[in-house]
Image 1 (spheres, protein in one colour):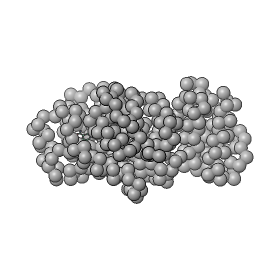
Image 2 (cartoon, chains in turn yellow, brown):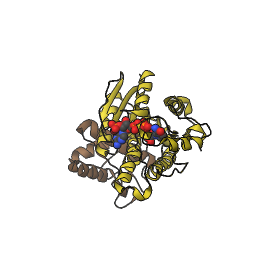
Image 3 (cartoon, rainbow over the protein chains, first blue to last red):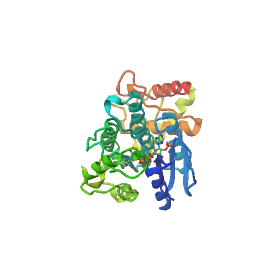
Image 4 (cartoon, helix red, strand yellow):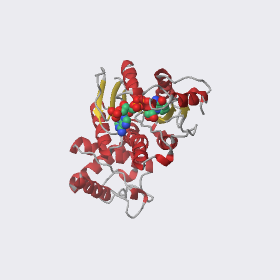
Length: 232
Length: 97
Ligand SMILES: NC(=O)c1ccc[n+]([C@@H]2O[C@H](COP(=O)([O-])OP(=O)(O)OC[C@H]3O[C@@H](n4cnc5c(N)ncnc54)[C@H](OP(=O)(O)O)[C@@H]3O)[C@@H](O)[C@H]2O)c1
């Protein structure tokens, strides 16, 4: 029986790569994003939903449980960013960021953990960012939302540990996706200079960490946020 | 709807008790205490019960409900205090769907 994995935010960027990589490794992958995929991936099933829509998330997780019988891994990747000075940031933007990054992560983690706690096994990986520990100017709302994800990860790790579910987070450095395409080259260079290892992150750097977190052998690794590039 | 809810709760409690083996849950009726008080189940067992019920409701009735409740930890009003109270709570939730 292939292991069953849910990945959020799979239409493009890191999530898209994760869907291709883990179907390639033989997982049954079910993913979601607000829009349709532009091309099919073998072994992958897509749902169109907003991760902050409670009903839709419950419906999807229930359907996956019913169809596949179990859910082994959740990669809570869907996320949005916005760069702006605090004094110029509309509340609506902050709300949207928190809805996607915090509420979406919460809803998927809660619903999937309900399935995992009954099968007494599960691996959850949330997505943080180096923008939080670096306290990056211009990213207050985004960094705050991901700081929330970081803390949520640590508390949830304790609450579900007895069900043999681990909850960890990965904090990527900048990786070339649409998420960062609005950031100027100067700003990006400054940011990368603060890293111990001064280069952009790659999709491979990401799966190196997710592979580790979701490995069966990582059953003693939980409540950790691992930052790439030497940021702490 | 309440009768159906009682059946679902009783089934879920028996299913769960195969694993948990609480003496107090061997013979279940409306008054059987669930969560809170001395004879009740612990909070992790409550989590299991609630998730088992949510899945059963989806599988049998095809609707998604969340049985999460702010009053969970209050003794007097908790919808999880007894089999009957939980069934009542589910019937109410299903009425809203
Ligand atoms: N790239 C980086 O430099 C970087 C650095 C640190 C952390 N991260 C984190 O890594 C994760 C992935 O980022 P990325 O760079 O791959 O971003 P991206 O290229 O912008 O992709 C975001 C993905 O999430 C989906 N999505 C966005 N909002 C959604 C919502 N409300 N509901 C469902 N799906 C939604 C998008 O699809 P739809 O538009 O179709 O919904 C898309 O597939 C994010 O959590 C991000 O914060 C990225």
